[in-house]
Image 1: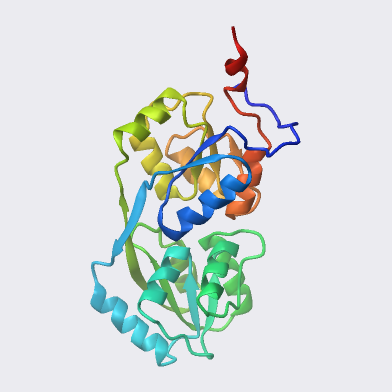
Image 2: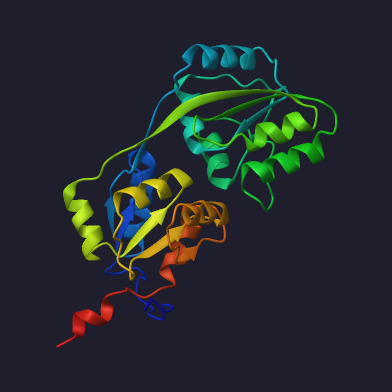
Length: 266
């Protein structure tokens, strides 16, 4: 791949067309950050989120949460925060909240929830489990809210250590087919970079764009997502050192535009 570190002192992503794989407020925020760096964002939602298939179980869990029946609430995605906010979920002071990473913690704080724990190094369910187990050697009552496709890594670890865990599906992740125009833009190399922000996004990128050009930069938001993307068969070019959008965009900005040399060819 002919991608080399960026040395230009202008806006580092000037001329780039970057695919943003989610819409809504999140997508709008990422698009604004990309524009600030000179890029042209192409917002093309590849995934969306639907309600859980067991609303009664979620309602019951949130009622118990409000009543103070849990010592901890674990949140492993910003989407789960949207579910909490939509249900006007009450988290009493007696219940501590653990967030999987900085992005999820920021989403919780933005809607008024207080975060007690964010993994210091490993922003994953496994990393969260390790820190919770270190903090809580005695059995605790823990509510884990998750997507229906999430692997029960956190739940299994906590139960194995003797904690009483209620694992509840908060939402479903569904694929969203892109337009023919977006597909053509990716296939032709008109899209210079694709942001890979989760394992489910990686799966959709693999399924919907089977012929991504070699020069297209695939950027993963962190090591865990990069691992999931590679399992899905994606050749990840760059991995952000922190699981935040700012770190992801910064990682992309250190590369030159893949087709820049072609523009000056005779």
